[in-house]
Each structure stands twice: as C-alpha cells, then as structure tokens.
Image 1: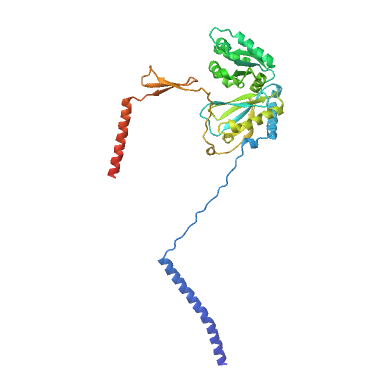
Image 2: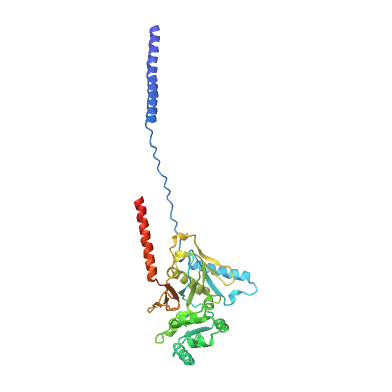
Length: 377
C-alpha cells in the first residue's frame, strides 16, 4: 500500500512540475521584454485621420424654375393682392409685374442688359413714342419733314402701335427744360430710340429716364428692310438696369395679361440669365416676383458660397471706330489729356527729364544698398 501511495504522489508531482516551469519561463520572458523596451524605446507611428468632405451640388435657376412653379407663384401673388386689397382688386387693372434678381457678388459698376421676350409687356392703353434721327442736320432746319417721312414709312409697314414720332432736333429744341422732360416721361409708357442716336438721347434726357422701366429701349430700324419686325422686337424688349447694389428688377408683364403669357416671359428671362447676367447663373442668390407695392414671392433661392463665384466684369461693347485721342494740354503744364468718343476726359502726368533722372538715381541707390547688405551678410 505504501508503494502505491508513493507512486501516486510521484505521479502527481510529475504532473505539477511542468506547469511550474512554464510559469517561470513566462515570468522570465516578461522581464526580458521589459528590459528590451527600457533599452530601445519604440517609435509610435500615428496615422493621420483624413476626413473626406462630400461636394455639395447647388442647382441653377434654369433647372429649378419650371412652368408649374411659376404658375403656383403667380396664383399666390394674385391671392396675396386680393387679400390685401379687398375693395379695389389689382388684377382688374393693368399693374406692372416685376422679377427681382439678387446677386451673390455685388457689382462695382452700373450697366444695362437687354432681354428679348416672347410677348410684349406694354399695356393695351399705353402710348408709344419713337425717337428717330434727322434727315438733314443743322441748327435752323425744320423737323416737320422728318416727322412726315417716318410716319409714312410706319404707315406703309403697317405699324399701328407707335403714336408719336419725335426727331432728334425737336427733342433738343422743345424739351430743353426739366419740366418738359418730366412731361414727356409721364405722357408715354414706352419710348423706343433708334440705335443711331441712342447715345445723344441719353445725354439730352438725363438719368431720370433710366429709373423707369420701358424707357429708352434701343431699336435697330432699317428703312429698306422689314420695319414692322424691328418695331415688334423693340416692343418685346426689356432692359435690366444693373445697380451698384445687390438687387435689381426687370419688367415681366402686367396684370391684364393672360397668365400663360406672363409664364412664358418669366421662363424666357431665366433661360437668358445664364449668358447675359454678370457672373452667369452661379452669381444669382434668389429670384422672386412682385408688384410695385407688394411682398415678393420667391421662385429660387440658393446658399452657394461667394468664394465659388468668379470675379465679375461687365462687358461693354464698343463701336468699330472707337478711338481715343491724346495730346498735350496747354492749361495744365506737364500733363497730357486723353479724350474718348463718349466724352470722358482723362488727365495723365507727363514725366520730364528731371523726373526721369530722379527715378533712375533712386533705383541705382536702392540697388547699391541691396548689394551692401548682401556683402555684410
């Protein structure tokens, strides 16, 4: 029995001994690892976290503004006006409807942009005036033959919309005072000007004609070709007067027009904004329609950042024979004068020989100082 017990104990000891050796080995290996780590510090490599931002795609007005949206806005405008004016309904009268355009980057200069619409914005009872060039130039030349000449041309072409013909000489002689110009502005709802005398007319009449819509609309009239077509294009033309601010308005129609015709005009303007508006469609913050004394109903709105819009430059077309003239000015010694065809005058200082020698001496002294600094370093 003793032998059996001793054998059993020995067997148990044999089974326990290998477990102890493994523990000792593991403890020894941990000590070795700690010594190695203390001797050679490990370099911790951190991978930078890259956050990928999703590009936000902003929609343009030509893709957002649809026919259904425009009709819904026009219906809302009609309900708004009927609620505000219960006694006198505005849509029974011929009140002008405007589109309000807000830009992202503010324009630094003024300008005019011409839009051609599919339907005329003029009221049915509106008076149309046509300013034409003179047949004969001179101070004491009578203007009645020119009136008869243009009235006969319009009669043969079948033009009935133009009520009064105003030659350039009659405009200078009879409308030379402010009150008379004001009367001309109030008597007519639509003033068209032949492109041959457009610059002269704008200087004679002044800036108050540019504040009102449907005034001084340029028209190309060729007596030998289709005059009626040219007049029709002029009646369907509207001007966008670009201010130095953020908001500008353009005429779209009037309340006496059918809703489908106003809808066509609005969609036509939205399509042309891509090419004609400064900065293109990306520079438009919002579009809305309104009456002269009503709240604006939005058609389009975007949160596009201003950094995504390029710098804006208004392109001004110059005539073929546009040329500046520069010469010496006797009243200001040492200055040259440059005169443009539109009448703008620029003074430019002329460098004398003494000024040129002083500039050369300054440049040479600056170069010598720079060389001395290099030698000292």
